[in-house]
Length: 351
Image (tube, rainbow, N blue to C red; front, side, top):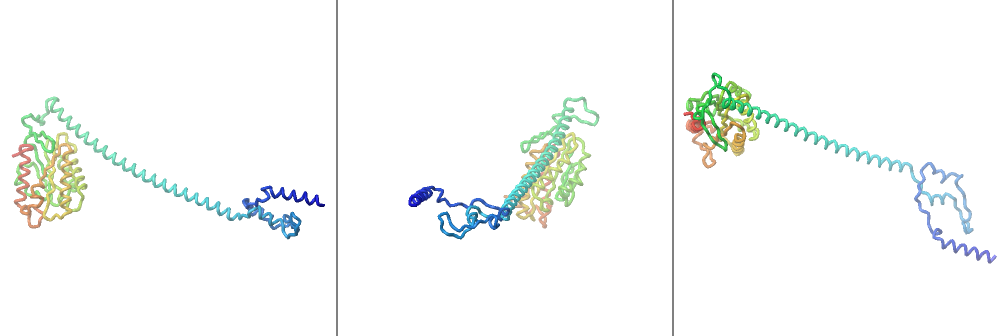
C-alpha cells in the first residue's frame, strides 16, 4: 500500500514538472453556429462526479469545451466580411471618380492645345501665303517679262524709304491714301485734300468696321496706304486692351487680305479724353502700347503715336477738346491733321 502511494506521488511530481501541466488553454479557435449544438446537445455532454484526483465535483464536459473553443457568431463574421467588402467598394469607387476627373481634365487640356495649335497653323499659313504672293509680285516686276498694259514699273528714284520702329518701308511716291476713322476725324477732307477716300463713321467700333466697312478696300489695286483711327468708342464700352488689340489685328488682316501688292496700314493711337477716368486712362495707355507691339511684328504695318500730341507731362491738354470733353475742337483737329500731313509727307511724299 505504501509502495503504491509512493509511486503515485512520484508520478504526480513528474507531471507537475512537465510545463504542459501548467499551460492554460487559450480560446483561439472559433466555432461558428453550425457546431454550436455541441455545447448544449446531450449527446455531446458528459457529467463528471470526481476530478482526476478523485475529489467529488459537479461538472460537465461543456465547461471544458468552452475552455478550448471560442463561440463565434456567424452574423459578426458576416458583418465583418460585409464591412470589408463595403470599404473596398468605396475605395474602388473613389479611385474611379479620381481617374475620371483626371481623364476629363486631360481631355480638356488636349482640346485647348489642339485648338490653339490649329489657330496658329491657320494664321501662319495665311501669312506665308500673303508673303509668297507679295514676293512673287516683286520678283515678276524685278526679273520677269515687260509689264502688261496698266502695270507700272517703279524706278528707284520714285521710291521713298521710311524707317520707324526698326522697320524700313520702300514705297512709291504719291501712292493712294485712304482713311478709315471714327467721328474724331470729321472734316479731315478739308485739311488733307489729297486723300483718295476718307471713310469717317460716327460712333463706330472696330468690330463694326470689320463687318461693315473693311470690304471697301477689296476694290483697291496696287500699292496703297490705309490710315486707321478707331478704338475710342471701344475703350468707352469697357473692352479690355487685349480684346481691342485682337479686333484691330483682325481688321488689319481683313484690309490686307487678297492684295498681291503691299497694302500698308498705319494704326493711330487711341486719343485720351477729358471724360476718361483712371480705369479708362489705363486701358488707353495699355492698348496703345500693345498697338505699337502689334505693328512692329506685322508686315507692312506701322504705328502712329498720335495720343502723345494731346498730353503734357501725362496730363490731357484741355484746350484741344470741346466742352463735353469727348470731341476735338478746331484747334485739336488741327493738331491731329497736321501730324497726319507730316507723316504722309515723310512716308510717301504727299504734300
